[in-house]
Amino acid sequence: MKLGVDVLFEKHLDLIRGKRVGLITNPTGVDGALGSIIDRCRAHPEVHLVALYGPEHGVRGNAQAGEYVAFYLDEQLRLPVFSLYGQSQKPPPDMLTNIDAYMRAFDTQAAGKTVERGQLQAVDVMVFDQQDIGTRVYTYIATMAYAMQAVAAAGIPFIVLDRPNPINGVTLEGPILEYPRHSSFIGLYPVPLRHGMTAGELARMFNEKFFSAGASANDAAASGLGVFRQAELTVVPMEGWRRSAWFDETALPWVLPSPNMPTLDTATVYPGQVLLEGTNLSEGRGTTRPFELFGAPWIDGYVLAGELNALRLPGVFFREAWFTPTFSKFAGERCGGCQLHVRDRAVFRPVAATLALLQVVKKIHGAKLELHADYFDKVMGTSTVREAMERGEPWERIVARWEQGLEDFARERAPFLLYG
Image (cartoon, rainbow, N blue to C red; front, side, top):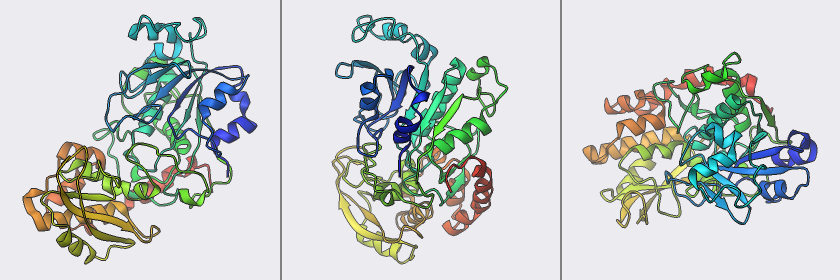
């Protein structure tokens, strides 16, 4: 198979030839041979890369979750690197159309420091190339959507170089986000937790379903469905990707999408275990197995593992585990808990499994388990799940309640899918 970046340089160079290119990327922006898209753009005589734009964790991927990322000048690349997870989440106009002035606003010594002035006045086309992980609760997709809104208002074309959904493009799970009440940077639009789409497919859906073809440039400052101007969007699809394929079936090398997404195993459990961010349980940050490990200082891993395995949840085994996070929740404290071992990913349902484990922890430890309503609801995309859990409804009934929504979403997404 071929990634969108490879297809771009082999077949569609006309999209960026002779143009001043802005690039939203991070360490996952590599081709099938691990060559960086940044280096490919800089090495090509007909491509003029003028600015980089970094999502959460930064262009170099070295910032931790939620960490402010500042604008800087990369002396090695001789390029300005703007943060879309620091001074702005959506590129302001000057960051796109008057780069030199924008640089001056942050550093009077920066403008013209690494490249000649006059070459940094505007971006002619914006390219998005980075690996998503198939779960709504991941800020890269919001960064893509915000950038699409900004470039549409500025009249700049937007190109998405597509990449696989690493946890396959078939399986859907979780409730549909309730818009606009629970819309946030960790989930903008009404899609399920596990959406089964690629970044390119989501871009098409956002642009055609949630942005308005008739919106004016001034409407881009408004909020709500259908008020953002549609982008001049081009998706460069992959070649040879099957919807049913997991990332390790593509023969592509895994590059960490973010510091706490070290392996495909992490991405497999993440659609459910990310819910623990809205609780007082450790989701394993600060360990070498984030999201696979979970627990708290007041949990006995032996007892918990026994209770969880008695449920016989499909495709997963819970192994007693003890760990001491080096940062994040319970840093420096020994925690008891479990590690999820996915034995059959075809039948494993991560969101259902996490709801089940939360109910078991509640059964054993009662009030010690806390659901932080605001953030838990943002992650879940609805308050109904938390409210049902607080009423003591069994997880099976909660899961059954969102099945109709998933069937409706499957029909809604169909026109925007690019792969059979």
